[in-house]
Image 1 (tube, rainbow, N blue to C red):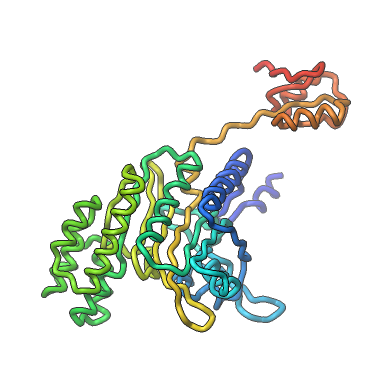
Image 2 (cartoon, one colour):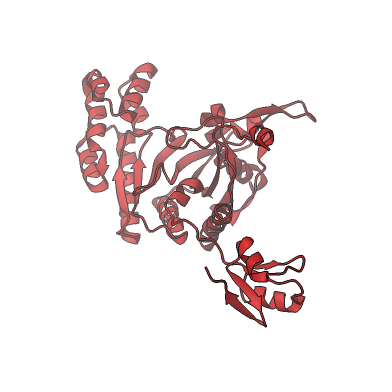
Length: 385
């Protein structure tokens, strides 16, 4: 047994889910998908493995290093295991559903696998669920997605305060382009803002440096952040992005004033592929983000692009925000219980465990098998502790 246990060890970052956690996870995923469906988002189911070039298109380009790769024995082409489902849904929308009227609302849920974990998420396999709204760019579309992300968390029973942290990863490139900064300097500014490194930002001279430092000062509650951004002498493209973000904040506030909104205009990590706003969901006292989303360009089969906005919920993080699942009650059915009686109990909502052989002490056997109740004389009775 010891030798077998050693052989059965799992790789780092991978784990078995046992009862009742596995069932709880499946129920939470079902609740998420149900919340998405209530808003008209139809579920799609992409495969776990695809050809590598499909998974590294568009938003997948930033995730190439996260993917396990293997060779398809049939075609001898390189394949990859998905590390995120967004790019797959983008492929389905662009190709399989390319002629479907826009805006197109799609939902998804499934497992993803990554080459390595992070400090905040050491797991290398975890479930995702999310939505993509394809073919429209508007504040109303952005607000629908942000509001649905928050609503879906509440639908699963999350009662912890949720913060929506908004960002504009396009601001730094817009400022750099307006002032003609070399690509290396623009990348350094982006990294300094992302890491909140004021020393690096102080080394950037001229109006561009002043604006970058202004972006750092702006990070915080949404109202204060927008006020700081409004006072900056931003180039026209960057100013338009800020005004669009202000419209999104107003739309979300009008729909649900209780949502806590913050803005970090320099945040870039995990938003590399976004072409507009991005957002991250946090819950008080929960390790890691509950989800991420934002606006991006969906690449079509002809190389053209279409606007899309969506989010992904990290179900493992969401589970940490919920109460631990209770052990379900099981009713022990002594040997000889009729099928009709057993079916009637299940129709009433009971979970039954049928004896497969007669035993001398049915109550003791029911306790041994972890049952909380026993069916005797036509009725369900609790077992004494």
